[in-house]
Length: 237
Length: 400
Image (cartoon, rainbow over all chains, first blue to last red; front, side):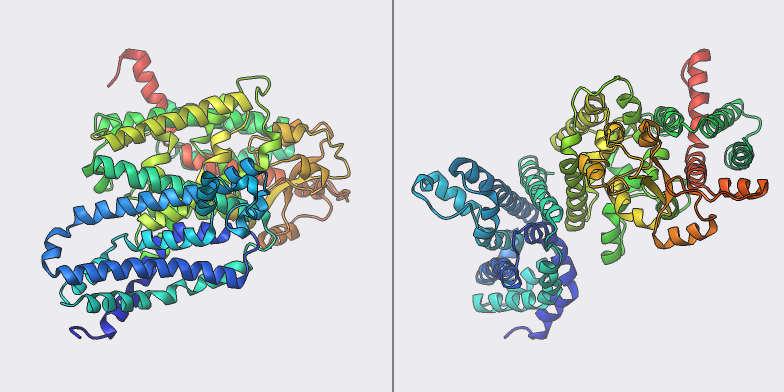
């Protein structure tokens, strides 16, 4: 192995607070806004989000290690910024779709919005609610789908410590080493996500709190999609 | 009468110290001092807090704009700020950024707003100090008594006699949106380590300074600023008679609501005297009194109350007044006040004249108004005379 296992772990652990800062706008409103959030459900959603992040890291690590140092020639700040804007756009779109889909579905199928949060999308499948567009809405409004997809998008956001990891992965030689480097880096950042386990304690019975969190999710989605995603991507800000 | 003289004498000292000391030769400083003292005396003698508060807050907002833009033209020759000037921290620190900068400051030890740390009247340190003192004294009273942006909505919302759109039934949603927006701004500022509110959402760029339009994103941002100013600061306050931007978008206002626990004085509704006529709810500029607030006999407005005094003036039963809060500081302050002198409680009036006088000067309504007005003087003492002198220069012979 061309690097010590302690190195990516230490890199992740020393900069994990930045990872949480990048993830917080996506993860916090999403987790706080869920109806009937239990510990298991909260842990499952957080786990899926983190799994999505790991998958994105592994893909980046493998690709860079396979391409070798030549990839770093093209991996400049402009490229990483554009990659981030793409990630923001898709993440924002997913947050918006997840925020609006249950309402649209409830309007269309007459299902209660309350059922939407806990069940992923609105209610159980009924014959009047099984058109392709309904299925898309149900898919977009699914909590687990959003958790995984948002994790994937956030993993593509290139921050300074990730940049370091990219360089080390590119110089490692084998794709397996690249994946391992990113996996260990990822493991180093995990302790910073532990406080999220306390979220189910917070919004219990606080309807106002959940309502506010859901509004925040839509605002974050709109900001990511338009102001942090599309506009910078189109006009190079 | 004695209380009015007592507090007015103290206010004279405050105005002299902050407004006149070192500027006695300036007629504009004298006009400012006379204006503020007149308003304060009228406020105390008539007990119509909201009317005179509204006059000075609207005046301050307009004069702040004149002075600020005037200074910008003197220094830069333009209201726009270039990227280099922004990076060189040539912008004054704005209090609205405080809630967005605190978490990044705690985690990364960096200030996300590029302003001077010290050595300037609006430096980061001085504004943080003012914010802290304001929070533990008047709390969200800042929004209705001190904020030099809020005066725009205050003035516009008073133009129509009646609200054309009633938002009373949507108060809860508006409050939820304001806190959601605060949460959103705090999170994305943390995620991007930049002042997202200033970059995209501040409606008051139009009355202060804005980024030079050099590309399409800054053009889009400017369109958003104009839209927010026209929509939330002019049109909606006119239609609803509410301070709409303060009640829905301002992150500092929402943050001050959360810090409100630290302040000692709040608004109390005497549920025994209340006839549930809802005039207070209709008059409230900050959407802080709902139908449920009155029906459920909560005895106080909701968390977003800015202690503007509109409900006190509107209540025909005189059932609403300033009162000490049962918070930690409130308990300490409450102990200083003779028991039973609150407007809500059956009075046990002191028997002697000096006793009655001291009981009255410890009334929360006087102490609050005095504190709030003192902050107003502290904030406005430089820009109001400056704006008056600029107006005089224009009237008497053209621009500098």
